[in-house]
Amino acid sequence: MQYQKQEIKNSILLHAQDEFFEKGFKDASLRSIAKKADTTLGNIYNYFKNKEAILDELVSEEYEFIKSFIKNHEQDDFDEQVWDVKNAKVWEKGLDELSDMLESVFSKRFYILFTCGETVKYKNTRREVENIIKEHFLRDLKKKFAGFINKDEMADIFVSQFIEGILFISKNYSDKETKKELIKTFFMYTFFGIAGIIDYNNKHK
Image 1: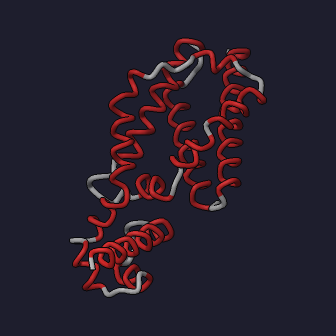
Image 2: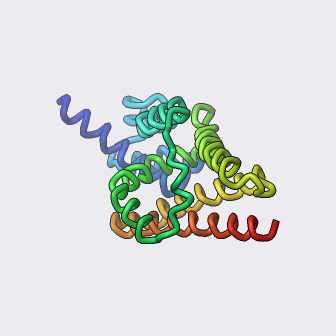
């Protein structure tokens, strides 16, 4: 009996994940989730208090990962020499080594976490991550490219577009190998694009 109950709960979570991913948290329907999970709306409430409780169950681990990342980011030893590496083959090799980690981070549940801004608990998650990436980016710009104009404004644009690109890939491509290859390529294009702008800025300032 216990196994059957857990099986029902897992089915609800699985179909809720797909519903949130496809429609967004705000537009997701508990009635639709119940139908896809082959159960009743009333039975969903036997397992979860409300839609927010289902969301919590789905993204709690990802949220704790993000909180840990935010808490510990000051201790990160970011290699500033990365900006000096202009060889695409070197970048490609490094990103290949990170491919498994990248695949797990850019999962459906992380996508849901980053796009469920209607909820009180998670509404600032994406912005907090954006601020950390921006902070590291600005730190390195100030150390290595002190003359770069409009640092804050450009960092906001770079970071926002970077996150949007990753979310777009996560949303629109389900094949694991295709997704990893696209993420790797997007990382490289983003870096070389920024590096090109910096070089142009330094030559024409």
